[in-house]
Image (cartoon, rainbow, N blue to C red; front, side, top):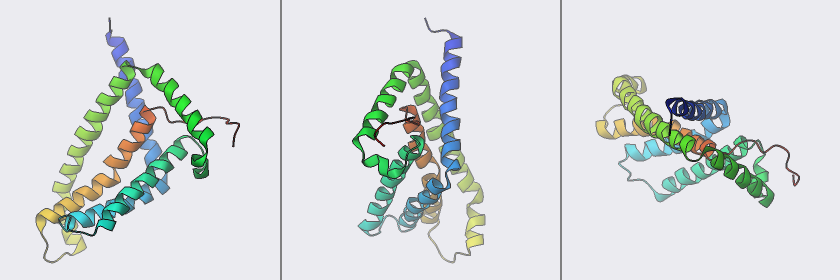
Length: 188
């Protein structure tokens, strides 16, 4: 039988995943800076109602792949070139498997709930609220002449989401799946 103290413990573990993901992502300025690329392209795309060249979408997705690989390397405490080594992926898979076995199913479920509630519920609501409250001021500061208000709002919204929710979600999922420092690996 599941007791309240167990549920609190699982919730605390999920909360730790959330807070460590936040400090990890915003503690690596290179990840934040790289996130500017897809954020800027996505904002431009939204400003133009997605009527933009295909290469922009390719750049957004390619940058996210690079960002994801950098996150894996940083979380595993390895250099990028280690990602080309089979031994790296074997060790990472073993570590991830161990973490998932230890957290299955209750901690994993708690992490999913925190992910859905905080990242896709609360964070998205905060961003929407922030956009609504600051939109007119941002337009005035940027001294934008004529513009499509819906497109401008969407550009602002998607810029902020691509700088926060999307990369933060990537880190959270990697941490959930046990991507962490590997310690000493013989084949370096």
